[in-house]
Image (cartoon, one colour):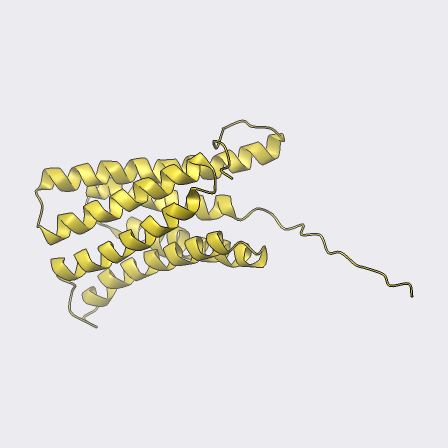
Length: 196
């Protein structure tokens, strides 16, 4: 019998840069606050909802369509992290619930640190740029948790902010590198070797 086989080619774009840029730019802006440059304000909350939250969720759904479990889990999880972080602030401001104390926030951040540490292990099969993003994000969550749990000094919290700024720029670099490398059809910004 003559059976025809139809193959469907995936012609959708790479959603990873959107997710990495949504995460990275929002992380830099929040950590400029943590480093002491300005107060927590509506700009950070709006970025948390729209770019850190919604854009990463869109990227996660697109990665799911491409069959990329790691990126789906990462982008959806961190997109929902940003929405939950904004909700923690807004719910208390609206009087819908008590504000989280330092111990509760330390537990919240420690759980995200644990999740990120395990995701970092996954990046050991990926490129160096993603390894840097996930390693520095693990450190950031743990520093934030320690800062809340120990009621750390402003100096420690500012140092945490600078670490977060580095983490955010690492994600921005990884996202923009993918965009430029694809556009030019060659390595414009290196991502590092893919591990086997």
